[in-house]
Length: 361
Ligand code: SF4
Image (cartoon, rainbow, N blue to C red; front, top):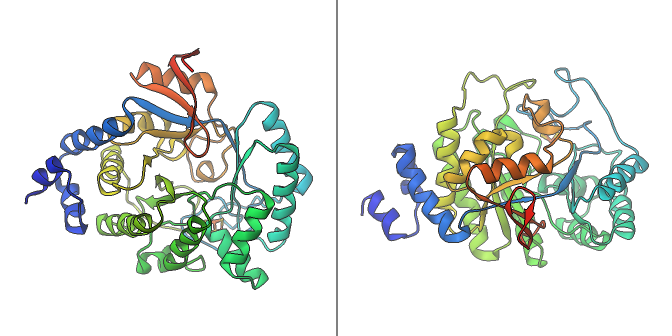
């Protein structure tokens, strides 16, 4: 069956199909991805009101693509104290955030027990605040640091009040590329294993893919299919987040410039390949808000959140350091012909806006 017939019939696409999709023109791809998105979510665009907190940028690893960690390119080491993290969370809660998204560099001074104390204190003060924390890369780092199994680290996270896991650290699963861009970090097999274990504990998580650096179409499709396989077993991934590689302030020398068409194609292909992951997020902090909005016509249904303060993408050149205010979010969604829907971290709908500022429920 040729690829257009497969798209029309809705059969599950395989690796070869994924590569063929890249050969289609952007608008054909967008048409099919959008059909799927509309069938699942109509014209809704999901977002949440969240605060990113990155307690330290001092890292034992040197991932070539990373501009966030303190190193020769970006020497600005910092580590927050527990009180500083708690104050950030407290102030953000007063402003009405629903989620604290806590991820960081791999710093042994911020060990598992340091995080556990913080999670417990945040939860004790703000029991309704959703804590999304510690990527699988951090779980691997902390399990190695403390000689604990992944299971033990995950159980301690749950006991301390972590509600869900973010999708960071996946980068690209292809072993050869991974060895080149982030050698010291959790390997692909273990990244997937940690999420699978987390899902088996009844918890949900997200999954990312960093693209636009030295990987190619083959590695992107391979990455999506490895996630799809785990999702078939567990159903625990809420959202797939293709992250656009930021070129500034890092050690990865690449002349490649990822054009908007390629970004949109990859988002559309992820919607078509990942038939078992409910949400595709166009992460505005890495793709820009305007392109993330266009991506809503190409398979994405989510923009992430207001974020308030963003340190990781902005260190690499993205214009995302100060988050987005809610009004701008609502305006861009409604003027683009979509319906803004504030969600919680697990995609329960909290508020549907008919037009900017007008709440339907
Ligand atoms: S991507 Fe994460 S693990 Fe890698 S150097 Fe940056 S902070 Fe460290």
